[in-house]
Image (tube, rainbow, N blue to C red; front, side, top):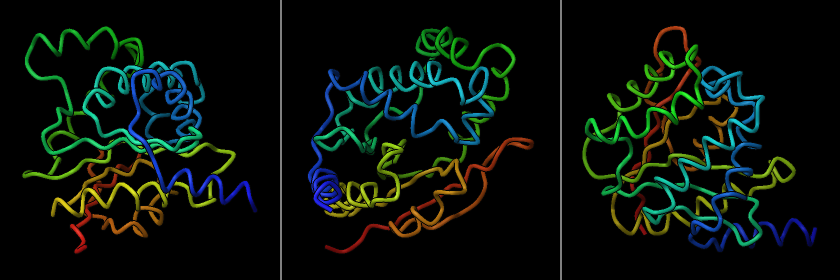
Length: 211
């Protein structure tokens, strides 16, 4: 019981992640997403290759999410949520940025999965809601503590800032197992935005809550 309370307390009082956290957090996210259907569809060799997943998450965390200041983690490192603020950059812009990311995409997705992965990324960008809002790009809980409530606790803690801003929040759910988790957090499913032949990718929206 003490261990569970310690984990929940840590999740309820998250801190901002720094670049020094990128390596351990990439391992956390790789472990959490190893059974994710969409990543299994996209990643070179499938999601059961943790080294490729770690490479993906390390690059996204270190090059995009952490520098933009809204990656929050528990002090014990067992739960983390990556938010992007309304001003954040989600995807490469312009030819130069896209060419800079191209070698990374090929390493992660491989030539065989490159086209299908780009189609999914394009669908995500085309269906992203307009206007100012917070974007939940990723959330991970250590598998050994899954189901304990840590994910709900860290979301509740970070929603305080989001709700204070009066803005809504958006997430794409890539795993049907997580639907109830997001619904409990106030997200409402809108539609499946995945391209034909791909696993489901459910767009979900959460209205700002009154303080």
